[in-house]
Structures are given as C-alpha cells and as structure tokens.
Length: 178
Image 1 (tube, helix red, strand yellow):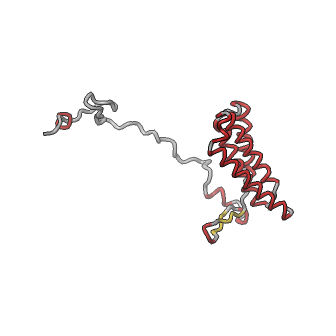
Image 2: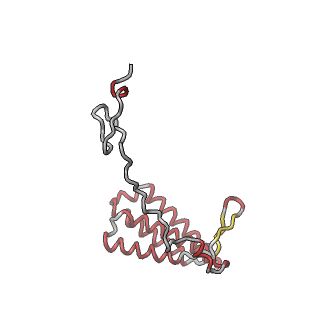
Image 3: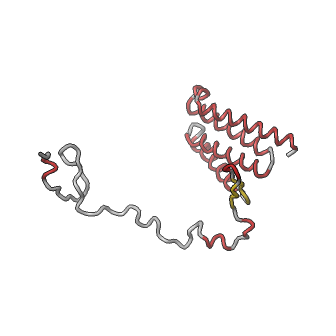
C-alpha cells in the first residue's frame, strides 16, 4: 500500500508552494524565470580577453614557472596596483565603519600577504616591516571586535606566529644587506 499523497497525481500550480501533506512540494506547471539571463551576455568591453594581451610585450606578461618540489616561480609580477587598491579599501572601511568591522582584519591580512610577496620578489626588507605593521593592525581590529579575549583566540595567535616568521625573514634580508 502506498500513502495517499503518492498515489494521486500532482496538480500543477503557478508557483512552488508547500503541500499540506508533510511538507512535500508540488511540481510547477510553468518554468521559473531564468535568473542567469543577461549576466553572461557578450560585451564589447569584456576584461581578460585574448585581445587585451596582444598589444603587450611578451616579456612583460605574467607567468609562473614550475619548479621541482611543487614550487612555482612567478615572473613579471607586480602587485603594486593590488596593494594600492587594498590600502584604499582598508582606509575606507576604517573611516566609514571603524575598527570593529569584520572586514578590517581580513583585508589587513590580505595586505600582509601582498607585502610579503612583494618583499620576496623585490628582495627588500622594508616590505616585510610593512607586512608586520599591517598584521599588528589586524590584531588590533580583532581586539576591537572581540574584546581582550581575542588575544587568546587561535587566529590571533596564528597572526603572532606569522609576524615572528616575517621578522625572521626581515632579519635575514637585513643581514644580506637588502
């Protein structure tokens, strides 16, 4: 024996609505509107197209060389635009919402990664110092959001470990005279 709600035919309705029997849904009689319509239409100003790279010098294009051990070596990478953009975003967030906004710590951590990458590429210890400052700013934002208990959180302690690692990298660069 089948339950009665499985033996009778489903009736078509104009929209999805819950059935009175145990939360089942009736099948819709018409197709719902296409929510993706118009999003991926062809555009004359589409970014990232092959034509955008044709006018550039091949020596200046960004590429990653595969190295043994699963490492990659970036070539022609310049993240100055990204650093500038995220610095502005961080300033705007703090100016408009204050240090207690959840995005402040995340953007600051991303900035620290960008500065760490830039220091590794350009072999300058000043960028490591800036990355350490930005991580300290992220920690301040965490304390502002969560109170003094944030200093005991694993995420806060992870940032402290990352700051120590960046300090060691900075010291090694300084010892080399860079």
